[in-house]
Image (cartoon, rainbow, N blue to C red; front, side):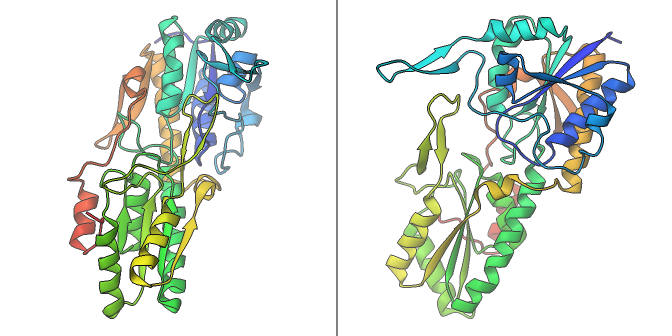
Length: 364
């Protein structure tokens, strides 16, 4: 067993339900082994700027059910590319702040840094690992797209929220005989939309992995209008795109390691369907509603299990790894294997097969 006297914990990237449960899992497991716990505030920005707070039992109590993260997070800050602002000509100024991160680690005498994040956050960890800092990753994202794990913290809660929204659109769509398009998050992966669409019985599910033909979707909803249904529910991923098109970019965030923000495809689809069919079509974009609120029971269990298992990896000396759930078993792999990769929905997914068996349209 490796002797660990002091650890650091940070949450990076976008927030999601279950982060506090993971912090609690790592923290309480560490305190039980007489290990001091230092929380890094606001992700890598706090590591660069040396903003920390000590976590003891009182700080870790009562946070299991809370959404968000008590440490704060940041998805615009990278140790290798720390945004300082702009020069007089308006050009962005960046600093390689890896040494500042290592100085914070040295000052607080951290033996291990626990990084709760996604592929982008793990990518930011790479220079720290290469500099010799022992790191252990805990996978979280509502997108469920991290390479090396079948399930991520935040996904089941976001799926529940997406399903509830789609369920509520059924009654209004039925009442007005409309096409109701609901745009969900997920970046370039369709797991969240696929699961929410399948759980809600959506008539059309559009995901990035299966480019769609708007004419086929229009023909499908017309068929439903002429049949007994009269309305259609479309679950649409923010990264969905036409066969001859590209994902719709809503915003580019300067200074962010992952600057592209997707959004707007739902509105385009609703407009195109109404233009082709004459059927009234409406759009609902869930946005950050999917990230908020208390975590589901599944996310609480998963986050607690991931957190405690991650600390066990540290005790075993298995550094620079990420804990994951594969085929129902906890497994560890090199944290850099999960960096800059996305686990996309395979075309032979059992979820896709189940949806197609229910006559769900994917627009292909």
